[in-house]
Image (cartoon, rainbow, N blue to C red):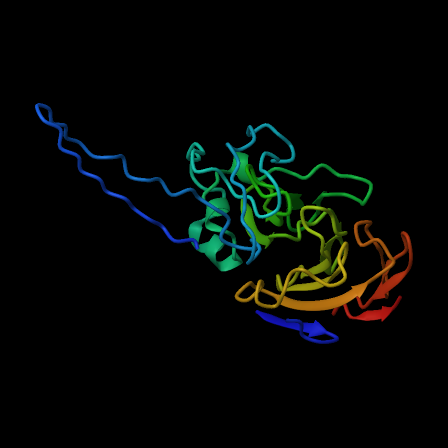
Length: 270
């Protein structure tokens, strides 16, 4: 993992257990209190400050968006029914890809859930050579979480690219690369453009300020994630939530103009 910032780097709860033993004349009782349960939570991409609000359960497996959690930083609920069936991706592959454990445990029906396409562009593309690329939001996922999945022709997950707090909203596939991106929203205010090399699988990500004065995600937040991450605190006038035109440049032209290098995602002009 490589990350850097353009133009510059930016910089409990105490558990108290009370045990009371009361002896009453003429009567006695015995037994023990049930052991506390530990709710599961998103271990990757949750904000370092603030408190998440767990949800009461996951969305039904038939829901197209996988919605069903509360606000930013929310995770799955402690009372969530354990997933049934084998995980959609081999555990070793999920670890390699940096997938949060709670997502990696999900079976295919709860993991592969295509984000409905919006005005920004497509969210699923079938290629003639290497299967299917899609943007998925797993069951019970935080509103800001989504992942780009590469599936084989039979629907098995070959590789995953998780984006906590940066869920992609569109997907463009060319002969050389897969691009994804988003504009900032309430759940996840940062904007983002990604590039996945189809030959090597290498990931590059440009994170920019969206609905805030600077990026809310930091280099520390992506430490250990696969890929090369670049942070740029500029608020670009172009809407990165609308898919660009791809040629000798990556050109965003909705709301303003932003031109990126199609290989490095370096800013060429805005």
